[in-house]
Length: 481
Image (cartoon, rainbow, N blue to C red; front, side, top):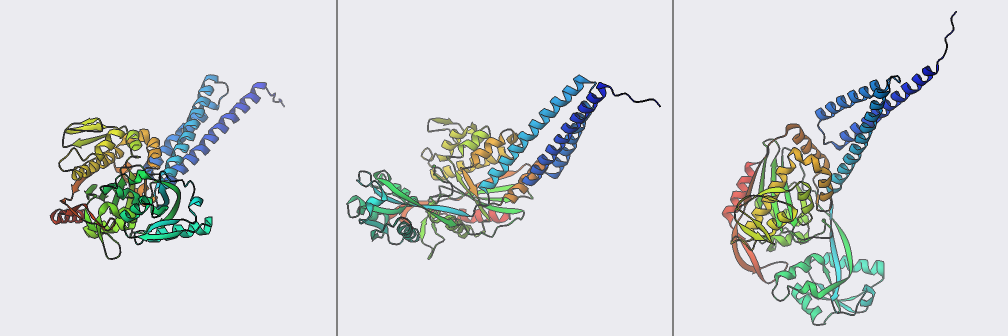
C-alpha cells in the first residue's frame, strides 16, 4: 500500500484555510449583531433589512472565496483587506446606530418637568450663602406658585436644617418693592416668574438687581393627554427663543404652534397662536392671562389652555429651545425659508423670497418682530416657516449624511412625550414611501390692548382674540382630522 506523505504546503494550506473561515464567521457574527441593532431601533423598514442582509451575506461569501486558497496570495490579501474594511464599517455603523437610538430615546417619552425655586438677595447684599439668611425675614408670594414655595421651604428645613420667618405679598411688584426697600432680607421666587418683571415699566432690570444664593429643583409629572397611535396626530410645539439651563424647566412659552399631522394624506397643518393672546388659563376659575404665561404653570396648563381655545385634544407636546436649535439647523446644512419682506435683523439681511439660512440666521429670522408692522404676528409666521423648512429638510434623504450631528444637536434643545415607538414608526413609513408632504400654515389674529392679567395683576399689553380667525383655525384643524 502506498503511504501518504505530508508536505509542508499541506499544513500551510490547512492553516490559512481555517483563517479564512474564521474571518468569514466573525464577519457573519458582526453582521447578525448589526442587523439586530437595526431591527431594535424600529426605524429601518423590513425591505431595507432584507436587502442589507442579502448584500452582507454575499460579501461574506466573497471574503470566504478570496481567502480559502492559500496558493493565491494576492487574492487572499485582498480578501483579508476586504474583511477588515467590512468589519470596521460594521462596527462604526453599530456604534452610530446605537448612539442615535440612545439619543432619540433620551428626548422622547418625557413624563416630567422641573421648576427651579430660588432664594434671591440684592446684588450688593452682604449675604453669600443660604446659611447667612437664617434668622432673617424672607418675602414670598401669598397665592402665585404657593405650592412650590412651600415645598421649597419644607425641603430647606428638612435637608439643611434652616428655617426662616416669611412675609406674604400679593403681587410680584409688592415682592420686588419689599426687597428693594429693605423690608425683607431676601425673597423666595420661582425662576420662571423672574422673567415677568421685564414686562413692567420700572421693573425691567429687576432680574439684574438680584442674585441667587440657592436654587431648589422640584420635579413635576406631566399628565397623559390621551395619546393616540392613529393616522391623525396633534402635537403642541412649545418653545422659548432664550437659552435655558434645562429644556424641561418650566417657563414662558414664546412659541405656541399646534401641528396636526395626517399620516394617510401626508398633510401637516401648523396653527400659530400669538404669545400675548388673552385667554382663560386652564387653572381653577379659569383666570385670564397672556398665553405665554401659561407655560410658567406647566405643560399641562399650556396644553389645556390651547385645547379649550380650539376645542381639540392635543395628543403630545414637543418642547423646543430655539436658541439651542441652531445646531440642528447647521447639522442639516442650513434651511430654505420664505420671507414676505426685505428686512435686516441682528446684522443679517433677508430678501423677499427664498433665503438659505444657517442656524444663527434662522434664529434671528424667527425672533425678529420690530421690523414689521404686524409685530408678533409676523414673528409667529416666521417661526412656522422655520419649522416647515426643518420638516422639509428632515424628510429629504440628504438628512442621512449628517444624522449623527443632528442627533447630538437635538439632545439638549428639545424634549417630547411622543413615544419612541411612534417616532420610529413614522420614520420607517417615510423611508419606505419617501412621501412628499404638504405643509400648510395659519396664524390666528387679534387686537392689541391693555388688560389685567392673572400673573401680573395690573394693566399689561395683551391681544384680544379675533374670534373669526379662531373659528377658521378650528375649521382647518377639524378638516384634517
